[in-house]
Length: 334
Image (cartoon, rainbow, N blue to C red):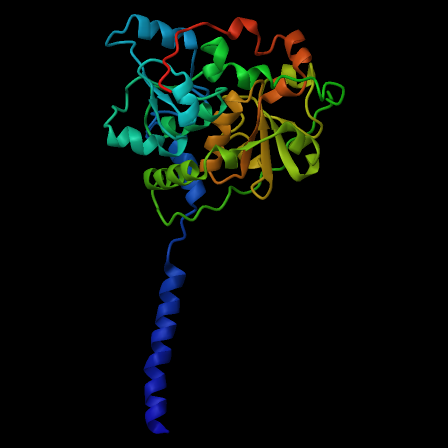
């Protein structure tokens, strides 16, 4: 019995010492560290990306002009993230076909310079916006999403936008404001990293691995279950009241409100976020940023163009129309 007691004493002392050490460990609030890093001049983008530069968009006319008259200053690396089948049916000359999930590894493998001009191309500009936001954040400062995607390149590639403008919810929007939530906590991140750069890379890779499938949502899914989402109206106060907004949507002014010292913490960390803009392109950029921070954010596809198109036209918002279409040459490899 005495031998057993002698064995237990050091074991218990060791347990107490281990517990004491664990209490002294510093618990890192990863989300806080990450936000502070991304909003600082030390970030890979060199400034507060969300509140200075989103969305980084290039017009198809600019990409086309660069290809017609290429020079050291204005030539683009065109990355087409559509399916291999659709790429084969028609793509921009010189474009490479890469899955959106593989875009970051491709840039690193090919040693594309961090300041190289990159145009990311998809069907409608939305998936490309999501992917571009991520590579911008990790340091590809001159990467842009091509506005309207391949829908603006040629008449044979306009299908995504031609079939997705709608007035389905035009009679259901409201003008009364919904006040923002009280400030709460940031999401909980658990990458195991402790500094901003390492946390960012871990989160960027995780969000890319999820794919845009995890970051998008149809307008009907939101309208059918509005109370299940914190709906984020990401445009000006003026348009929030005229023409109006989705009932319960809270207004956040771009390049201002979603910042640590403004209203970032009023976003629900324990609820799905449904973010919308005029076309779904800016909201795709913003959603990627929020998902990197740990929010369960989703971009409403086609924005208000897909919900109350005519009111958008009347209010002078950005809309898809015939003027956005061009007849630029396509390379067919099928």
